[in-house]
Structures are given as C-alpha cells and as structure tokens.
Image 1 (cartoon, each protein chain N blue to C red):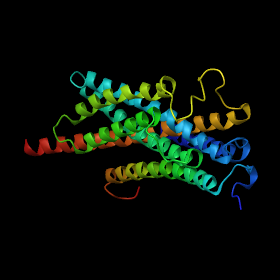
Image 2 (tube, each protein chain N blue to C red; image 1 turned 90 degrees about the vertical axis):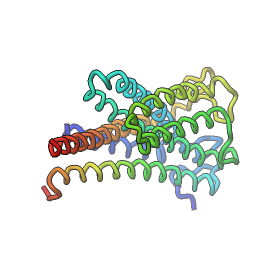
Image 3 (tube, one colour; image 1 turned 180 degrees about the horizontal axis):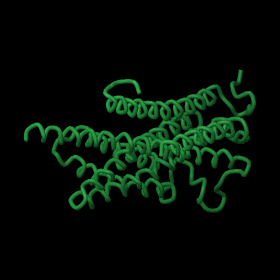
Image 4 (cartoon, rainbow over the protein chains, first blue to last red; image 1 turned 90 degrees about the horizontal axis):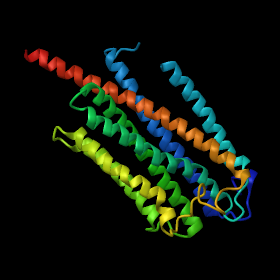
Length: 55
Length: 234
C-alpha cells in the first residue's frame, strides 16, 4: 500500500517512498531535537539563577 | 523580547506545518521521478540556509577579531553570535547532505559520488565541525581567536559550493533557480519551495536567537564566576 495515497505516482518504488519518509522524519527529528536540547539548557540556566527552586 | 520570540515561534510552526502539507499533499508528483522528488522541498531550503549561515558566522567572526582588544564586551556578543550561527550551519548542512544522500540512492542508484558539488559541500560541513571542535577542545587561551580565523577560511568554501554546479559538469543536477534557459521548476511546484524556504528560514532565525541567548547566559555565568573568584582572593 502506498502511504502517500493522496499523491500516488506511477514512478514510485518501495525504496523511493521509504526514503522520502525517512528524509522528512530525519529533518524534523534533527531540527526539533536540536531545539529541545537548546531549550532544556536555557531552562537549566533559569533554574540555576533561581537557586534550583521552582519559580 | 520574550513575547516577540513566542509569537515568532508560533508563526514559524504554522508556516512549517503549511510547508509540510503543501510539499506532501498539494503540489503534484514529479513526472519522471515520482514522489521521491518531494525530498527537494526540504533539501533545497536546508542547502540554501547552510550557505547563508556561514556568512553570518563569518561577519560575527570578523567583528570579534576587530573588537576583541578595543571593546571586549561587544566582542563577546559577536563571539556568541558566531557560535550560534556555526551550530546552525552544521545543522542545515547535515540535513542538506543527508537528504541528498537519501534522494540519490533511488534516483542515481548510488548513495554518493565525489563530484564537485557534493565534495565541496562535505568540505564545508567538515570545516564547521572542525570549528566546533576547536572551540570545544582547544585550551590555548586563544580559542575564540583561533575559531574566528578558521571561520574566515571556512567562508571561502561557500562561493565554491554555490558555483560548483555552474563551473563544472557534475553528477549533481544543474541549478534549478538562476541556471539559465531551461532551468526552473514547473509553476505548480513553486508553492512548496517558497513555503518551505520561508518556514526553515524563520526556524533558523528562531534557533539562532535561542542559541545566542544561551551562549550569552553562559558567558555571563563565566564572568560572574571569575569575578567571585577575584573577590575571594582579594
């Protein structure tokens, strides 16, 4: 079954569909993963300034 | 500033979601390649931003080198910006390389080839990885200056990457935009390009602002610690 059923193309192969999803998943994981690391560190800094207490 | 960043973040997420939807479900599949061509809508913005952020890093590094003696506090701000843009350069170039490799295997039948575009782009990635390693592991006391000088040299690779598909015959496709007669995308595919280019540019700016803020806090912490140590010994 083609997971991209809305835009099926006759030229698709199983590998091309797999690589397409892999590419999109990789991009979103890397970008949001990096953002999560930055914001976790920013939050850690804020907690340091408050002496480790919840604000 | 915090409110502005929050609004920017929400707007960026909305544009990203729209870009994803348009790329996967609105624009038509490529007549020759089929759906695998949709990787292009994430590959192109990442590659373009992977060539823009090095110039921001270059400008910040030059500012650091110029200001480090006369105005050390302003130089520290420039250095924080240089670090932020270097990390984001690595992020976008990594994605540019990875999405290119994933596209190449089904379309070319190979994962990689040592043509001028791919090699010069890999070199750019390696230069910024070495930039980060210099910053992380150098213990000479001149780390920031060394990194800034390395950044100046790394920036030289950017125009070579950009021009490689114009100067040499490469396995990499010829320029899609600005490539002369016969280049370009079908008009029906352009919305996916513009939405995703706008979305990832907004995301890049957002990440750079957050990373800059984090580095400034880190610098402040180091200065506070140094001041406390000086007061303790006095």
